[in-house]
Image (cartoon, rainbow, N blue to C red; front, side):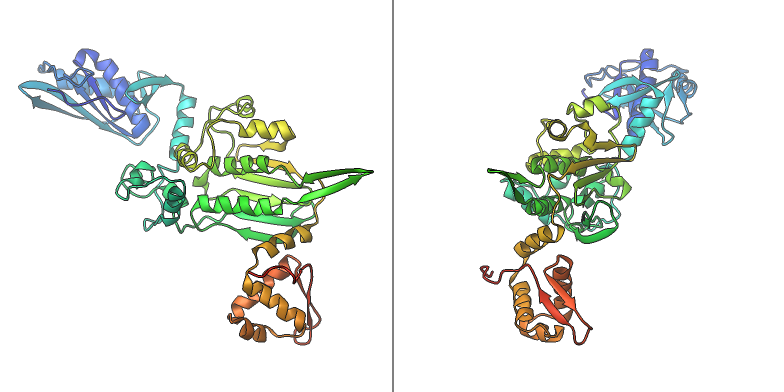
Length: 438
């Protein structure tokens, strides 16, 4: 009779003559999963051979475990009869990691027991507890329409009854995990892009929020917004004409996608983008992954913090597993653009020339305007004293909505209000009314 295969949770030993090896397997499984099962009387291919059981057999197993495993655990040891052959089943659970066997530490990998140092074990334990697939989501009422749309757009099918398991959106207990929350249609994570006038954070002139939705949708919106700000500037040096972009968008893209992939989402802080007159800063939470050296990082060697999220981003063509992102940035800007600490990684991309903040933003805002925005501007241009309530009536939108739209237009320098509240005037700037209306 065959009872299956060895796994990260199950180990087979032919007899109690392999008690020491069996105890090491128990510790490996405890450190990896917090539980494990050991059978005596079963070959490693799952075939039952039987175990001779004497008066002291069960006691020797119990005492061996008590003497070898620290901190102590109390196993459940029972005898089972399988096709007229005796086997011993040892079940163990514990939540006081790390555990040692005979003074050494082990970790389960597939069906193997690997010895590791206490420091390595602590790092692995911290990494495991920080994993977005192991942390239960606070919200268990999640939907994934946006994620499904992304897969459909890549000609990939998701089976309704299996996609949660296939995409690792569930914990071991079958509840939604933190990655599911990040990729859900509605969540509590807001990805921010802040634009400042000057070279510090004193004067905030624009803040866009792309969160509270499927993270991958928000990531793409940030890329689209930053690409819209990346204007071409013409420099004339004598008779030479030189065109250049504000920044290298391919480098920004790699830095931004890496920030989203490797961010420590368990710390409840999404990555962010800050744009100044002279640079762009991309900030992610968490330093280098455990076990990855700085030299390996610059060489493009990858050790994903969020492996399961990486698999999804590869499937949807957000990233490639070539490891070329960091080397690309280093080749263009040098290693000094990376600021790596224990808690953050900041990538600073310098701008090729001093930008016109209001000009950049107003051009982007004009591209994003709809028919109602254009109508508001036309009404202001025709009558600089027009009231918000009158604009609301002619545009066909509520006063609150109109007020929000005007506030946005003022933020990017397209509209200015001069004079007292009741008798002041609207001044429309930086807008060409000959543009084709949407």
